[in-house]
Length: 71
Length: 75
Length: 241
Image 1: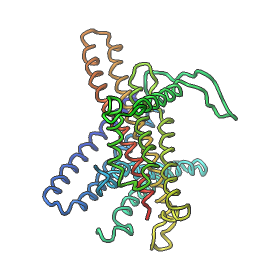
Image 2: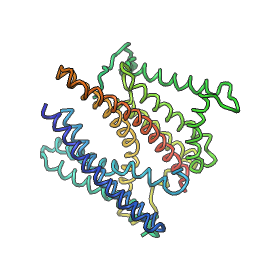
Image 3: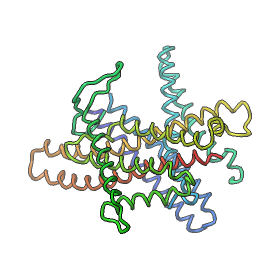
Image 4: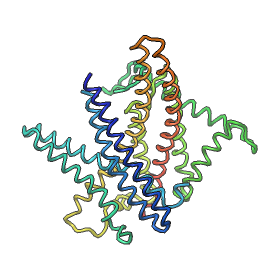
């Protein structure tokens, strides 16, 4: 029973962190795209890389929660 | 809409790059675990496999966006 | 591992050469979804009028939505690959929506069904590349040019892993989104059974209504994302220059 609680808590807290991080990245990148529209391709590529790194941490937590459910 | 200009490939990348970092990490951990069961040294090889897999995953993203041969003019 | 309140019933045991292909409730739902998609699209274009009726307008909206997005991506091979993308979208949408009906087993919340769809997309985009550029030329395009020779095995491993990440991510994304919806529904509605109190039963009831509306939205979005990524992979494989 504690395993299921740990599974739920792990993905919930990691999801909080990932959602906040991606939201901040998106907000700052849209703001900088509006300030300088000729730099949009470079800003877009950087945003994609940053979102990938943040999202991978939430996916690690998802894998751990699947392992905790299956135990 | 999105696929007509150059946003299409970037949106497709943004949906899959998270998995492209996690999958080599998991495969490295799995390979390390199988080698550990064969050689009996737990958990050293699995931890090494985990970190090597994570490094490979990060290197994939860096290679694709920064070091690749078609990125020379974007840098 | 399936996290819904409907069990997977085996209706008729079949096995060919040791492989278990029995008729389960998931198989019945797959056949019903395919039949519904076929009947809806058949009767939409059966006697197509210039001023469309209600069903024909829905099919036309879906067709024009995907047509406008993939016309530049597919180029002249649009008639070859657009039906595949549209079939994926309609089938996954009907499967997701059928899973919301109480009593029907939700097949897209089962990793086997989403993995099968992801493998179909994987085979489709490699087939698209082979058919459009020839067998040898397509596989040669995976090897990056002008790299030092010592880095070549590492780069080939990286390329194979990133090709494997595509169907993996397609399957996991659809499976996780649908399972999350059913799991939250199960958890919230079980509060009524645990507490047995009429005053506490209001929150799970209203919560279930809100989650149900959100689940319908997620069903549409996930079907669209799956079909979008399939079209993107096919278009990238066709344009391999």
